Amino acid sequence: MAFTDFLAPLLRLRAHSRPIRLFTSTLGLLVASDSCLRYAVRDTTTLSAGLQQVQTPLGWLGLALLLAALLVWLRLLQGHQLSFFYPLWGLAPLGVFLVHIVALDGWTTLKGLFGATLMLLGAGLIMRGGHSF
Amino acid sequence: MNAFWTITLAIGAMVAGNLSIRAAMIQANQPHASLLSLWRRPQVILGSLLLSGGFIVWIITANQSNLEWSYVALGLSYIITIVCAWWFMGETLTLEKMFGAIILVIGTMILIRNSGL
Image (cartoon, rainbow over all chains, first blue to last red; front, top):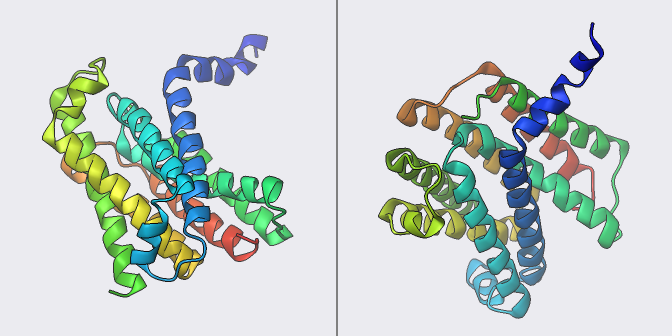
């Protein structure tokens, strides 16, 4: 096997760098928006109270981040399949989880890490079987 | 309205919003058109409103009720979207996509149940 064969997956990644960049931006903005909105509505018990809490500075920041995520998402859907990229939104809880662990002294167990591994495995399977165009 | 129906409606809105946006993109068939020109399309405006509204309501309700169940419901929306996108828009449907989405949802359930989220 030629040495360059080992580099093939990396070269494939480079060839798809634009959609990868767009998707990771969407996911990053979604995680940030999710965290802001979740924190803004953390003490509410009803939907109407939650919607009122969205109208605080943190809630507005969450909405602005959501709008930015939506714009990048639109750009991505211009040339790529929804059924390929939308299930990958499922990786967002992993991002929220990392923020929780790093910034908010969160915790997990071995089972939790197993769940995170399964999530990555699922995403890998989607990427393997998907035709994104 | 109880949490079950609120989350079901929110997720339905997100699926409908995404399908509406994608349908508009396929109709426009302009991969390099500016975002401003895309925003003029009613389907894109409707889809964006449904998607963002559904997302906000889902976060609020998920925060107030059982988080694990909310994520399972969101995971179901991925599977519904894969099937609907194949059925209505002719996108590719593969076993890997379906199993990948199912494994992702199971992983999310395990992560949420065993962490301090």
